[in-house]
Length: 218
Image 1: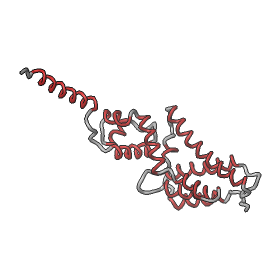
Image 2 (image 1 turned 180 degrees about the vertical axis):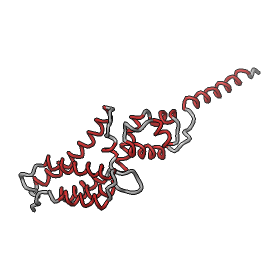
Image 3 (image 1 turned 90 degrees about the vertical axis):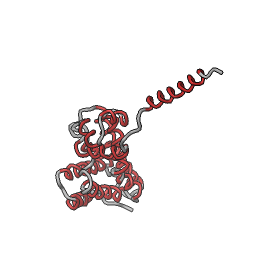
Image 4 (image 1 turned 60 degrees about the vertical axis):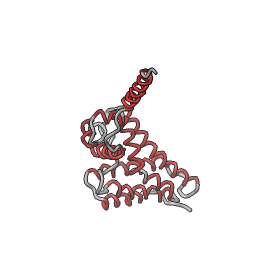
């Protein structure tokens, strides 16, 4: 009986398994979700342009090869960071718009909750979407952040127009200007929080800003 062909087959199978394992690469030796959280923190604290790959790898506890393998380059990582931030920390505005019965109640709640979120002691202050745009010179990132801010204004305006149509706001209310006014207060509160404003101070800003709201009807 000739046994060499069987041995050859065994060696071939072993070689094939080794080649497959090599193609797949070694398992990651870090917690991807935890590393992503650290990336969120880093971009939130420093902004997009001021954050280097070295800053990210140091905060995430991984080397550049692991970062590129798991997340892609800095820009693709930031896209994932932005989605993570909006889901975990930036969804309070959407909830307010969905849950409150009127535009005034919804946008007043957005500003009041922003005062709390922007000054929370366990995280960087302000809004990542706003701060990351500071001195940003990467066109794709700049456009992504602009679109996000613009979509917020559009959502504000939609709620205001709905109240005008329902007679809850005067027919001559300028929905476009009013929505931009709220957005300007929101963005200013983010910067004030980064400059050291307290939650109580920003809550007073929120209440004062709502004093300019048109009188509500029925």
